[in-house]
Image 1 (cartoon, rainbow, N blue to C red):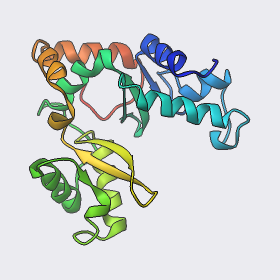
Image 2 (cartoon, helix red, strand yellow):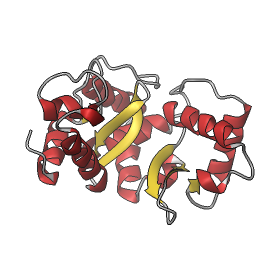
Image 3 (cartoon, rainbow, N blue to C red):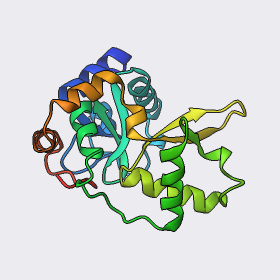
Length: 201
């Protein structure tokens, strides 16, 4: 694939869901660009810069959500599936794994009651950094919250967590309300194929 912003977004629109790296059941961005499986880290591949630029283009497009939907890996979800995804991740019966430890539950409560998105580097006085990172990863992997990376004023990338309700705009919420949870699950199952996810689909 030739890497331009329009090309990679059009590719994702066609496949609907893709992981960054190879995963059984869904396409991967790395393999779509390289045209073959990549052994080891894609960073060292001859087309590593293209892969990075493609991932950045997807993230910046406004049409793609990056989340940890498939096997805890970075997963790109096209906007056409956002209402179905939102409907399922906010459904109390779509049990998410792994189970949360005390710190992760505390962090979830903090994110749920905050007035806006929560940046992890602003919580280091409340939590020990390694413990905080582990708790955030558990929330990400279980799809309890939406997470994103931001570039800080200090030149670092930091994780920002927010509730799915805060992430979703009015159009996504309205479209999700028109979906029954079973229909939303069916839509996601069809897009995910045999991929393993931390949702009860």
